[in-house]
Length: 146
Image (cartoon, rainbow, N blue to C red; front, side, top):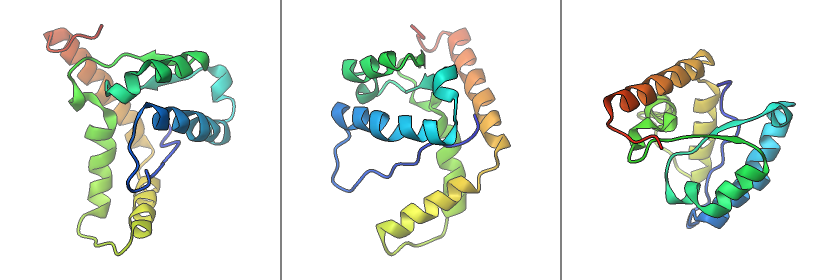
């Protein structure tokens, strides 16, 4: 809700599998939380993943359970409910539209700037929008939240 904690570009040719994702959680995300949001690890984390197999793999859920992070449910068959898809990526596209990049480093730098330039209030709006989308889907019975 207070902005992006970790921006991690996946190296070209890397397969995002359970082991890779678990390593990013352990070696990148957790230290980034400790650095950018001091005290948050101790006060409790609400963590949201979509239902991608990598995110729901036992090895990943075991790591998150070991951290005592509360996992927020994501309705099955609902890719349109991922906040990155309806909030972050469209906002970044607005900033990046019309630009050409010579190297991967140029793209990485431009996305870093795009994320940094996002209005901090937009994260609160995105969270509220996400909650409304979840409630609407549950109310309409379109998605099973179990």
